[in-house]
Image 1 (spheres, rainbow, N blue to C red):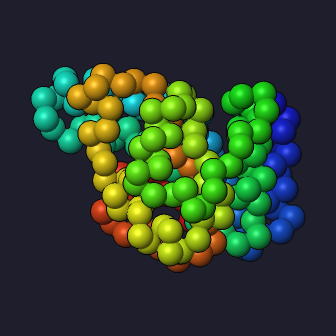
Image 2 (cartoon, rainbow, N blue to C red):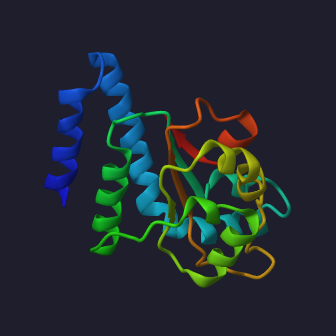
Length: 174
């Protein structure tokens, strides 16, 4: 597994920008990878943070949404497939972009446990229309004591930046 990760990161040297840009991309992807592997614990950490600091916003320090964006032809999909293979022993099925609505995502959070829900190559319209409702649903699972709902992983080339209200609640890597 470690060899696969090393090989992927070495591959960045072959096709991406200046030395500084390569280093920045490697750091961003490394950060995303660490979040991805710890994402199964985020709902429990959010719950404990909420109850420990009663109605405070410390639970926001445990994001349940990760976004890889604006890295056209850089291997985002390959990277996420590598991470899912390492986490689960096989690739996770992708969800359709058309299913990226507040209602559908919430349904999936009740149906799936632990393994992230993947929206690969999400289009700009779906992102713009629903990301706020999905990402800002900060207290999902807290009242129900639901510790096992899945995180959301989004990859897209279609957006150029993440707004501050979204970025403070996600792991967003450009």
